[in-house]
Amino acid sequence: MTDSTSKNLQQKIFKFFDEKKGNDVELESLKKKHRQEYLKQKHQEYKTKWKKETLRFTADELEELGNLATKHGYKRAPFLKACIWAYINDFYVIVDDSKIRKIELGITQIHNSINESLRYVHLNENITFQDIEAIKQQVHNLEIKISDALRNPPNLRVWLQTQMKNDENFIKNLQSILTELTNDN
Image (cartoon, rainbow, N blue to C red):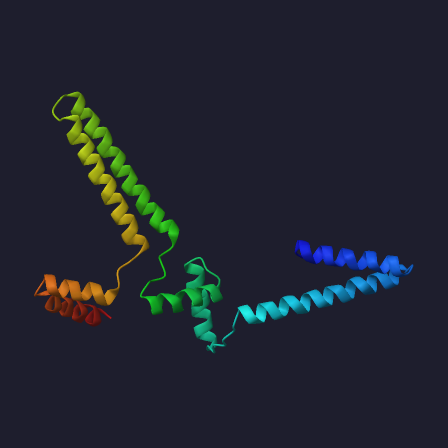
């Protein structure tokens, strides 16, 4: 209960004792009535704030949705909501965060190895400090771009259009890959 609701109940109890000397049964009745009014009010607020829509699935579809939701670390209803909004907004449900963290950890390890190599080269005076800082900044920028790409995959339609503009043989290559894949299955 909110603070104002508890004060409201407190005022009712004080008023109850001021008006008459009630017994425990009447006091419990007063508290029960207050709780019912409170729940009714909260239910009305909930109904005005949230709307509900029913979807129907077969048992197999529901099981598959549950498995996918679990795979992505969601419960079924939030997973469906995320998928619907992802479709509408051309975003995607991201792969399991632990896999992304493993990739980011690998990138960080590469970054650290490059830093160690650069320090060694600098100590031998084969490279300037500015060169080292420029390389470190490039590696850091690459790390941010890869992490962003993993967490925000591109829209497939936009990506395909970009590939078609950049490579005139893209469609031929894609068709040959698809033919190869369908023949394997």
